[in-house]
Length: 361
Image (cartoon, rainbow, N blue to C red; front, side):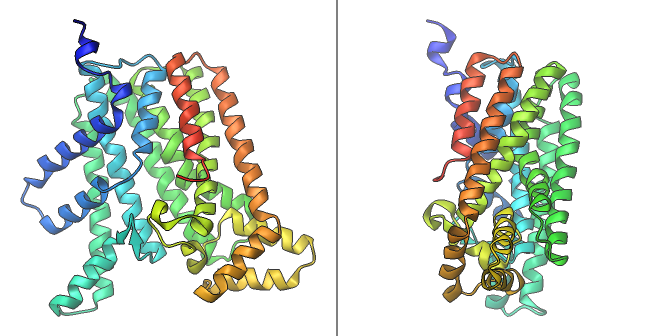
């Protein structure tokens, strides 16, 4: 009996393998006697739900470049990809603090949970400030452990050295994108292009482009293959964020894990809102411009959510974003034709693009 008949290749077993590797890594770190409440909060977040998109894209970057589907090398790569889920944990916890989000994946966000404990226990000081500080530390811990997970996964030295360059770039791009998002709000930006740049750095780079780059680098992919994977990743990653923007306004909270309309309540300056403002100005709709700006300045309260959602549809902003998603997805898929990919990897990347940009996910 062949080995593949006994042990499924990772391609067919990736979600389970990733989950086990993440659980094993966190179990090892939990044994260290360090701030167990922070460790428990981080573990609860990263093990509870999540689509595992980032390590999945990285795996198919590895496979696209001819990386093994089974054996010690494949096992080491799966362990290394735990780093991407921890990096995501860092981003989520810090993003929730900055956005003042109340829920994440159907439960209270870390800063809300720690603030609530502070109030229950009647501790000294300001409960909200304590919650924010604890959440910042949880995110920092996730970032530190992400580095540790990559370095200690057992990758050969040359492979780890190749992976380190996209890993460095990915972390810096993620921080830069978050800063530009904050800056856009502070400066009252109404620029579609500025919003797309935030989507490119804050989401596309660390969700699709750089994970693909990292996986391909571990497999020692040639520059032309890395280039086509990154081109695919940039376009599909931005399309993923644009879809996320739409879901943040119109999505099902049972699927998104966050209250519907939260982006409107927070007054987030997304490409969707910037597009709506452009269209309202072009149509001479000063009433619509006022309503949209009111939402951006103070956030929309519940009774105004339906009005703003209706405006986004009526002005054609939703249709324009849908067209942009379709165009970006198509251009990303065309980029795959420029590289010599393993056929199975190409098929999976096509499916991942469809999954990442689907209207329900």
